[in-house]
Length: 249
Ligand code: 13P
Image: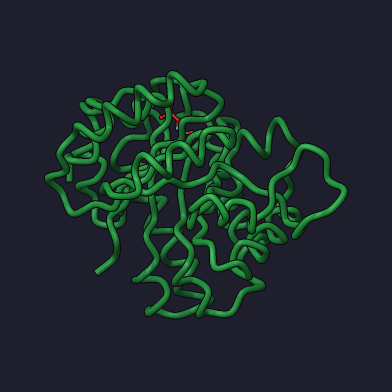
């Protein structure tokens, strides 16, 4: 059975006081699904969040990290720093990191290696921009993003990898991929994994969908056979909405 996962990516939102009130609201929620639940606050509030949620159903994860162990990388955060505040899972390759911070497939391959070497589970994100979707190039783009950053790995590390398909045109736009578009892409991703690593890996890796998932569309998207959960942006900033999505399974 693949794990069902709903992860909230808070992006660059919520100062300490806002984080504390969202954490309090999250602790008051009840989980009625089997989904694993995660939230990714900003770096400065990770420890606070970990302390607040460590006895709860909600895991605190990070939005990014650097590939180096330590050293002269002003402004960056390492895997061991994340681990030292209780983090066990990190999001890598978000399209906003790629677009605004110049993260290439080659950089992401190094980040994935560093996360795995530090026993951090990775939620690896990828997805096409609108022009690629319009030109019919979306599968080729996604395939190359996955191959370039992950296909140097052996099969065994995939037990610590979760994939997140986030079409860039659906992020923060209110325009969701249709459940059929999500299913088609997830099935393609699973086939790509199957071709390289075989059925055991392909059938055991969870593939999340991200891009304008809301309480009113989550159930339909999560109902598709190859969609194992969601990576949630805007709707994760409200505890009621986020748990409505968690409980949509
Ligand atoms: P939205 O849910 O706000 O579209 O964001 C999705 C996302 O980028 C999650 O990482």
